[in-house]
Length: 172
Ligand code: SLL
Image (cartoon, rainbow, N blue to C red; front, top):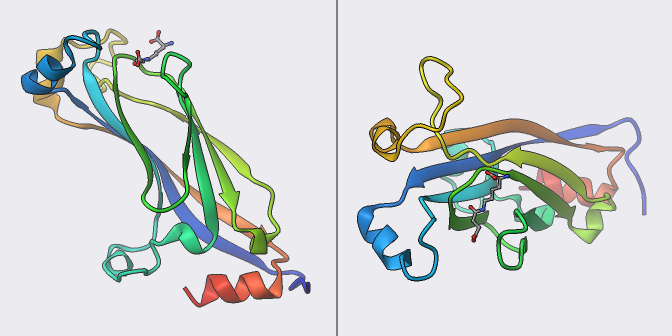
């Protein structure tokens, strides 16, 4: 296994969440089992390639050629809080009532010879208010504000990559 010394190869990603207030119908459906749930949300890791690249099937947004698994560790109030996703889209959709820190562990393909990395994302459900008021806005205010997005940009850096792994990265 030959390493290409002195080379850093970067892959841009975004990770974070979108959250929306449950519709009255969705709340009704959950009323018997999870009456306190107010929001639906999706936490995800995605490639941050340009929009035009993302239109290409299997193009630059496909992280699966170097990511083997993403493990999302949710709050302990969730059944089976540790959730593995082994193929794109690397995301989990859930419902809930509260914000918490999500641990996102990225495991790379064996060929990469890279240790897993861990990212942290604060699940955001409630919209920012103009006043910066820390109070949770009432649901009718949140509905008017629309979906909440909270995303962070990062770059995965592979240093001195194995030759075969470099070939995998650069041919995708
Ligand atoms: C808080 N520290 O108190 C946080 C905890 C936990 C969120 C938030 C539902 C889990 C379930 C859920 O939204 N948990 O019952 O399925 O705000």
